[in-house]
Length: 247
Image (tube, rainbow, N blue to C red; front, side):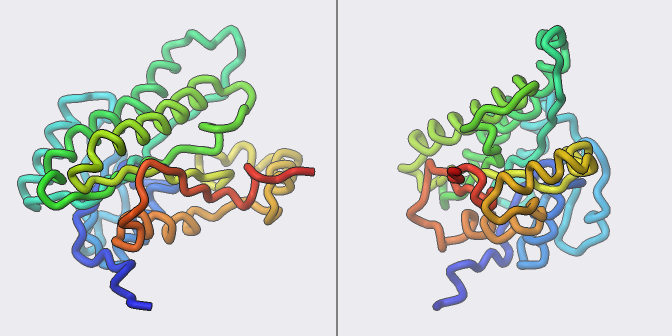
């Protein structure tokens, strides 16, 4: 096999949520594979000490900040090859809190910021094409309890992917969903640390374990590289077999 199929050397990549969790793992993986990574989050990242990594501290609920940082990156690099929308928030909600202000924050981070980021990077992708990767969730397809804002936001993000892939395919811009199952991150720490929930979630996957964020690096590189040049508007599911498990 020609190894250049998966080559992302010197690709200009923007990754949100790069200070921890899945975003951090993917950002580090892309750096190690030779990409020039621009991370975006509301907190600092220790990746800032790495060569070829630039960190941008912004509030992803602020549309102007999104447009400004993409403009800065695009004008400096003269192109943007890949955008990975990974930043996300979740909150277990009791029924009486469904209309709390926190719902709005989750929708703004998980759905609206990817919308505005995608709209911003597309103009830098029009000449040479590009890849937009939205990190959704198996919750975008399946029902899960006590988390209506998160599930709604990820389902909306999945729909946004299909819409953008349709509208911009003629420019060589591919848009796909990377769909994780249960991974051990700061966001899932409460469930991971609960012996009963830990075991239950592990047993729901065919592989009978939780995912490691590093296991999303390969699928993300695949979607960012020419190895996936004829793939757009679809889901790459990385859930250990959770979503197809029967009895």
